[in-house]
Image (tube, rainbow, N blue to C red):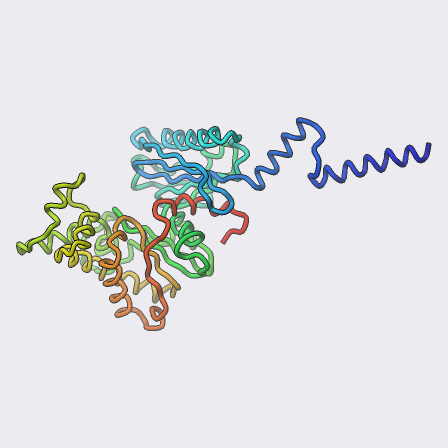
Length: 361
C-alpha cells in the first residue's frame, strides 16, 4: 500500500515538474495555451510603414527575414481612424494567410511620419496624413489587435533597420539621412536610438545652414532640407539651365511619367549630362555642410544616405564627402564613412520590428 502511494505521489510530482518545464501538454485546452506561449516567444512580428500614399506591412521573423508582405493605398482622405483600420486589416490578412492567430504575434511595430511621442504612441501631427492631430496610434492599434504595439517615427524606424540589418551592422555610432521629398534622419549613439526628452530628437533636416536662405516647408529659412531634397535637385538644375546650356534632361523628362524629377536628373548625370552633374554637385555640397555639423557634434563612425535622391550615387556623395572633410574637424572625418543605404524601402519595415527582437540594439 505504501509503495502504491509512493508511486502515485512520484508520478504526480514528475508530471507537475514536466508541465512546469513546458515539456508535456495534457489536454486540448492546455495544448492551446502551450502553443500560444511558444508562438509568442518564438513567433513573428508585424511591421507597418504608414506613408501618405501607401501602407506597407510585413511579417518579420526573429532574424529579420520578411516572410510575407502587404501593400495597399493609405486612403488618407478618410481620416485617422480609417487609416488605422486599413493598417489593422493588413495585419489580420497577413496572419490569416499564414494560418496563424493575430494574438500569436510577438508584437506590432509601426513607423509613421511624425512628430510623435514613442512613449505613448501619440502622433502629434503628420505631414503626410492630413487631419492627424494627437492621434493615439498605439492605443487604437493595441485595442484592435490585442497585442503589444510600438510606434516609432518613420525616419527612426528606417535608421534602426539600416543599423541592425543594413549598412550600419556592427557599428555603435551612426547617423542616417533619408533624402526624398524632405530630409528625414535618425541618430544612433553607443548602439541606442536617440529620442530626446519628448521623442522629437534627430530633426537634422531642420538645422539652419544659411540664416538668410531659402524658405523651408517648415516656415523657417535656410534649413538643410531646403537645400537637400528631391525638389532642391530640380531647382538647382533649372538654375543651371537658365544660361541656355544644352542638356538631355528635357528630353528624358518628356518621356518620363511625372516629368522632371530628381530621378530624371540622376539618370541624365549617369549619361554624362553636365548641367545634371552640376546640379547634383551643388546639392551634394550642401549635404556636406550638414554632414560636417553632424560629424563635429556626434562624431559618428558612419553617415548613411538613403531615399530617392541617394540614387544619384557618386554624383551626390563625392561632393558631399569633399565638403564635409573641408569643413569638419579632421579627427571627426578622418575615418568617417559616408555611404549609401543598403536596404531600400525595406529598412523602415525591418526597423519597426527591431523593438520586438530578443537581442535589442
